[in-house]
Image 1 (cartoon, rainbow, N blue to C red):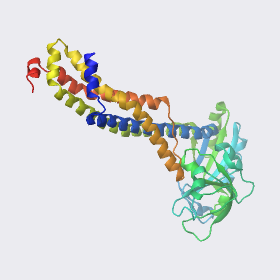
Image 2 (image 1 turned 90 degrees about the horizontal axis):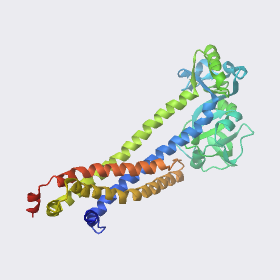
Image 3 (image 1 turned 60 degrees about the vertical axis):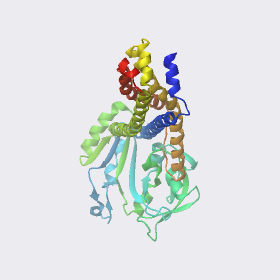
Length: 390
């Protein structure tokens, strides 16, 4: 009981040092939990939106930037282009269930000024099967109709029935006027949410790229047929890059793993600062209790018991500040997400038990490690020196 009375005496909430040390833990845990929630949310959103892509099997794309001027189109596509005539017959390959040609370009509007939007031309089948679905309106039925990504709709303050004008360059006098017919639900992915989807022929005509695309998605529903389809595609299209969508998922997973590590590192910096504040507080507590430590040793307290007193004191800061920090981190992440959504940017969040456990576990570990140096100093004091301290 003496041990716990000593610890509780140092944790008096009226003590400014106690409040500031606990606040350091709260801030550290809050930043860690909020950053992990953002990281897990982004991972979940990207994986969810790539699930349909993985089922497609393969992506065909130009091996390098190709001037479309050679095709008599008088413009340049930075991604390179694939003539539509070259991809005819892919749907007849055994095992291929769907072929979706896509033309992607950069567009601007008068409302967004210099901020670019992605303009995606695709057949209606590609829009219905490759994206999460509509939250408002319907898909297009005409060539001058558009479906907007969730972020694009907010940036343009547009709803079904409104008309928008797409420009090739910022502040062009004339552009392509289209009617908005639908709004897609948010995917949490920048490129998909901040995009304008149009019929493929409309984008080809507006950008002067009739008859060409720059991406072709090939769906293969039967995994056993995938290798045979790949062999046919490689033989038929030696000049094109053929990317397996499973490989895309692996690469994206690696990138997201790096992102998780970066976010965890940023959060750990704040925890390191909190650890230093715990070391300082426990060290000050040791300096204030030199005579008490001498008395306890004279009464027969062992080195281990003295050590435990100050380690428990350090862990107590984490026990108090950790749960508060978890709650603060959840609120902070939700606040930032809401603030960004008002400006038209989606920030996916995922609060799972792993974020809470990681925040609490790291805070306890930091508190334990930070408490050891001052606790060892207290345990190694000699009785005579401690009792004679003034």
